[in-house]
Amino acid sequence: MSSSNKYLNKKIFIAGHSGMVGSAILRNLESSGYKNIITRKHRELDLVQQDQVENFFFSEKPECVIIAAAKVGGILANNTYRAEFIYKNLMIEANLINAAYNSGVEKLIFLGSSCIYPKLAPQPLKEEYLLSDYLEFTNEPYAIAKIAGIKLCESYYRQYGTNFFSAMPTNLYGPFDNFNLETSHVLPALIRKFHEAKTPQAENNSVKLWGTGKPKREFLYVEDLAEAIRFLLENVEAKDLYEKGISQLNIGTGEDLTIRELAKIISEVVGFNGSIDYDDSKPDGTPRKLMDVSRIHNLGWKHSTSLKDGIEKTYNWFLENFKS
Ligand code: GFB
Image (cartoon, rainbow, N blue to C red):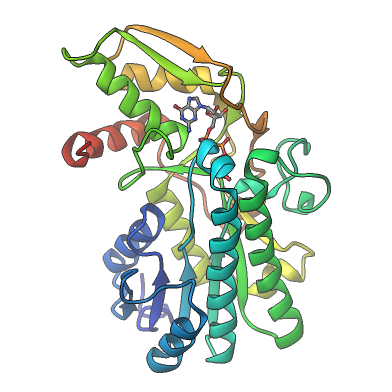
């Protein structure tokens, strides 16, 4: 990036830098020459505690903030820990956004998820479909919290003129993903299930997936997402969204596939050739969640990692790093 990038030396706080998303953003900014990034471990700063967050912002005075901190999980975790998902996410984003305003933060980017869109919205999901119909039940608490975060950013812009806005990534995967089979998303779960089923110790050469395998999902490699966040930081302002009548910007690939098709690709990458069964006592969730990415394409960003390449990279990361 040229020296005309006015953000290179800004003091940037990445909230949630130890998670999959935050750590990818941290790696991306550092390797792009950003010199003044600040982070805090959970035990140093509990984002659910308003007084801690306020004190941190007033003592550190970050100039830019990226909110990648959230309580996240797959369909079962969302459906089971409903109270934790709504409470923690509301607290984290309200504390961060309000403290950012109070301490004079220049720019803030809040990250959410494609589950903010109505369950049966037309596809692909345009930014304008926010709040146009009811939500998917399994992740309604998480989605409500994320919608509140979007509206916090928008309301602070409209009342106070802050440069705060929201980006909504589609389903993400990559290094540092959660491979816990109870709480993870589908892609890391399938990597682990296929990997463990092909080992000599496996009880049988079959894998059980959840639901019917018919829902369609879109997947973005987390390092592409990190690239998109740097692009937004350097090139997009809050008014670019709100003046166009949208509250958040989609980030995705614009391509989706069924869970069955996903399972086929992952099984090939992992080298599993046993049988695949489906447990339809587990929920399917939203039938389809495909982002309309024309706005971010028109602004000048497009993903670069194909699904197969991203799965291969993630499987290699799993082989080198995952300890059950
Ligand atoms: O990725 P996932 O947990 O979340 O599930 P969502 C996607 C689809 O994969 C569902 C199926 O239809 C699952 O039933 N699936 C099949 C599996 N086998 C498995 C498995 O072994 N593990 C998992 N986890 N799924 C979450 C939301 O929705 O996605 C969040 O709950 C958030 O709010 C996140 O938006 C990105 O895509 O259904």
